[in-house]
Amino acid sequence: MFKEKGIFVLNLVSSPGSGKTTLLERTLRDLSQKLRCAVIEGDQQTDNDARRIAATGVPVHQINTGAGCHLDAHMVMHGTAGFDLDHLDVLLIENVGNLVCPAAFDLGEHHKVAVLSVTEGEDKPLKYPQMFHNSTVMLLNKTDLLPHLDFDVEKCKEYARRVSPGIIIFEVSARSGEGMEAWYQWLSSAAAH
Amino acid sequence: MFKEKGIFVLNLVSSPGSGKTTLLERTLRDLSQKLRCAVIEGDQQTDNDARRIAATGVPVHQINTGAGCHLDAHMVMHGTAGFDLDHLDVLLIENVGNLVCPAAFDLGEHHKVAVLSVTEGEDKPLKYPQMFHNSTVMLLNKTDLLPHLDFDVEKCKEYARRVSPGIIIFEVSARSGEGMEAWYQWLSSAAAH
Image 1 (cartoon, rainbow over the protein chains, first blue to last red):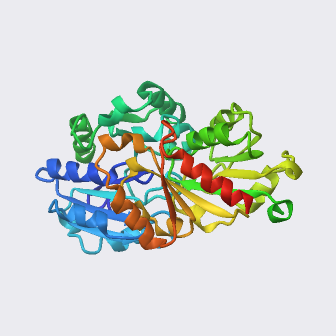
Image 2: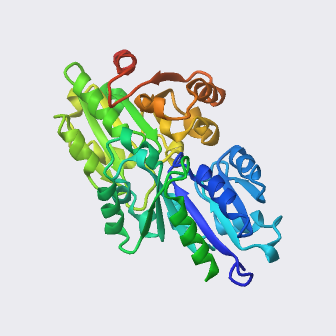
Image 3: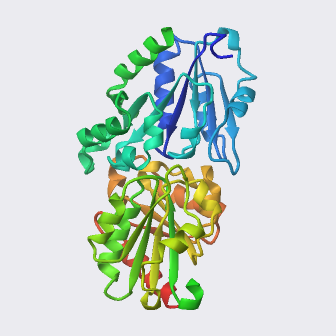
C-alpha cells in the first residue's frame, strides 16, 4: 500500500530514552515545509509523544500497545486511517522503545533506522546485533554529551559495522542540532527515489 | 529452591545501557567481603558483562538468549548449576536490557530492581508502567550527568510513585559512587531477613 501510494516509510527503533521523539520534533520542524510528513507513535502507555509531535503541526497518531513490546503491521494499517494517504510523502513510525523485539517485525517500512544514544555505551550493536543488522541507518544521538562520558565513537562505529557492514552512520545531537543536516540529506534523497 | 537454601535473589531490569553492569561491579567490590555473592548475566549476545563481573572475583554465569528478549526461570535454574548454592547469600541476576518483556517473568527473585538512567528522561515510569509497578526498588542511576541534562528528578520520582506507590527510590551514580551507601544498606538489610 505504501509502495502503491509512493509513501516513503521509516521505522525508528531504539532503547527507551534514546531521544527518538526529540529527533523527530527537530526533523519535522526542519523538513515538513519540503516534505509532507505524518507520524505514528508507539508506546506501551501515555500519549506524551503524540502531543509533542502534534505541536509541530504534523499529523500524528498514537498507538498504545498496553503489554505489547513492539508495533506490528496491522496496528500501523489502522494507525494510518486518519491520514490523507494520497497527499503524503513520508511516514515516520516511532516504535516502542525496545532494542530487541521490534527487530523482528516488518511494518511495511522501507528502512529501519536505529537510534543509539551515546549514553548507552559503545557495545550495544554487539549485544543486540539483530536490531543493528536489520537497520539501514544508525543515528548516534546525544553527541553533545560526549565530553562528559567514557564513550568511544570509533569503537561503536566499528561494532555496528561488524554486525551490519553497509550500515550508514550519522553522528547527531537532536538537542543542539549538530550533525542533523547530513541525516536530512539522506532522508530527502532516499524519499525521492 | 532459593527460599530453601536461604539465598536472597534480585532481578535487575532496565533499558539497555542504563548502567546495570557498572552498578553490579561497584556493588560487588564493596559488598562481596560481607556477603557471599554470585551473578547471572543475561544478554542476547557477547560475554562482555560476564568478563567484567569475573574481574571482581565473584562467580558469574553468562546466559545468551539469542533472539530472546528476557530471561526465564528455566534458564536461571541451569545458570546456577555451577555455583555452590549451599554457601551463597545473594544472587544478583542482570536481565536482558529491555524495559518491556522482563516485567512479565518471575525468575524466582525476591525483588525486581528497576535501574533508570537519568539520560533516558523522567517520563519512563509512565510509558513503561508494568516494569516500575512490578519493581520494589528504583535505582535512579548516572546522577553525575544531571548538570548536563534537562531531567527533573522530583517529577521522575512522582511518576514512579504514581504507577508504584510503595516503590523505594535511591539516587545513585555507579561511576562516582555517590548515593551507593543507601542502596547497600537496603540490600544488606533485605538479604538478612
